[in-house]
Image 1 (cartoon, rainbow, N blue to C red):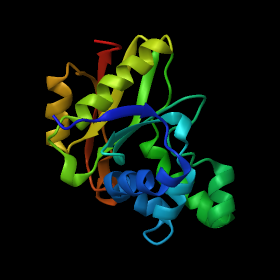
Image 2: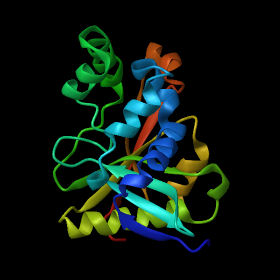
Image 3: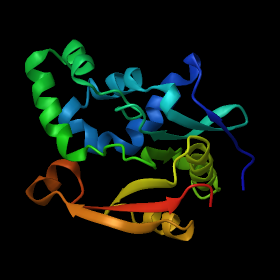
Image 4: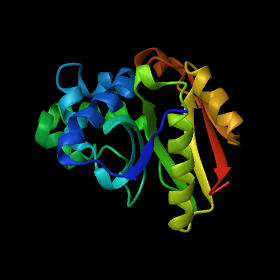
Length: 195
């Protein structure tokens, strides 16, 4: 395993790298709502360091793991932010397009909002280290469980989550909207915090 340090949040100079990783991992799902030209900058600006764990190797950000807290996820894509960045008509459209992707907080559960590792760093234990840190974060915050969702087009991630002790608790389908987001089905998986 690569020597990696996990910490809470990112610094100002690290924001662009965190945003780059987040968009690389989730841009396919977010592009229909935010656009390909404006989306990366909007997501980067919307990332909240207080809702992210960051993996660093050799002083560089190599992975991030977002989570929900106080009604928002890692990227604050609230109505106010979207309206300010996109204007009212485009913000209404974005909210409608984002609605099927929403994963809400649950009492006693730390709901993760995206985990991503730099392409060249995958397979080196960074994702596992981020998930372990998320479990510790949940335990410190008094949560009993850590929950995440994985899409059907990412079997490698689903296999990792299973190896780490996450178990399926629910699933769903986007039906006719699947083509819009690039996946058809998702699975919600949960693990006891700190295990």
